Length: 295
Image 1: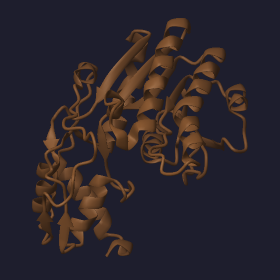
Image 2: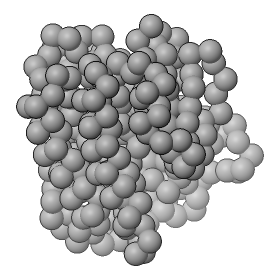
Image 3: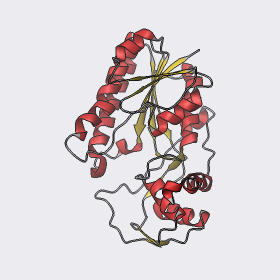
């Protein structure tokens, strides 16, 4: 059975990816702080605080590495080393070990934000992603394994943090918060439901042997939706009584106006995004409705 090492298995994407793949693959998860609560014969996990990475490669014949672990904004000085370790040092160590131990495929999770280096809100995060992509290409040129860079667009889904835009808005609309202050909502984003993201990774796993040594896929729905359109749709789908106050908040400095994917590369492999925004919004709202902690 193919063995896959996944980083960040307790994270939003990593946990969903793990739970989906264990029916067909053997999954080895690594995490920094919190273990994934999952009991399955095809799943083992290790804390990077307790076990050296090389020990894991020595103990298991790993065929594929999928790097999903990440760290975002630097809000205080102590956050920067964590961000650099998760987004740059860890993938570099994994690339080196993949080369040494005969891994066949390395999948890196990138972000559309890396196309916008002047975006001040996530500047350190973006820089780390750009640097990692440069190293991916270098390893692909000098190693025997294939490298895939997945440029992920605006992923959303249930059980994600309520500090993130999509879940925050849907929670407020679900509980009928009296007034919701927003920007003008002109920013265009490409929203992609997490389970569609997971299926894209699965598609890559099944056909990677025919791919070139290095390839990048943009992973999104391919459809642009403004923030105003998204919030208005969610308001309608949920039948919310909240008052939407557009134009009450300023845009961020150097705000990204338009970010829409071109998923044609994945579509050629047989993948499609099949979860509509309306359906995704309803799924997340049902999560909040079923949890007393949100009501």
